[in-house]
Length: 116
Image (cartoon, rainbow, N blue to C red; front, side, top):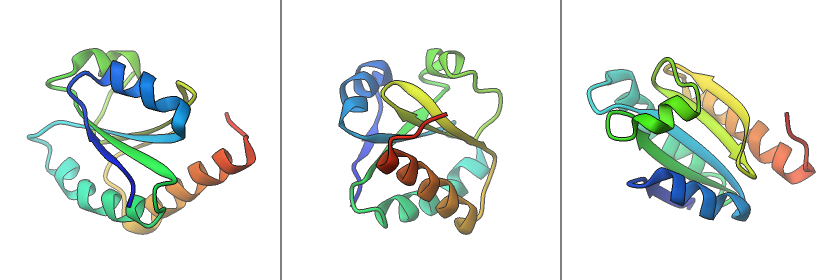
């Protein structure tokens, strides 16, 4: 199963794990119902990848600097990061099939070394 990171100091965690592989960052806020619905769906899809992708969850009410740094205008937002750079972005509540396609694309780009 992929590693799930609850971020308290997201900048430190992201910089220390970015070199280890792909990171999928889920940006949300506690009061957001679509964010709560998306969480279990995304965690299930990430678990299917058997550690090929890491999941970091960021509550932007507690980490407003992250929202500013990554230009987050709406939640939920999914951002794939490789080597400290944004590779892909997906905003809004998504069904499991769309999440799976998004994660598959991120993992495939990491395997081939391609990036945006």
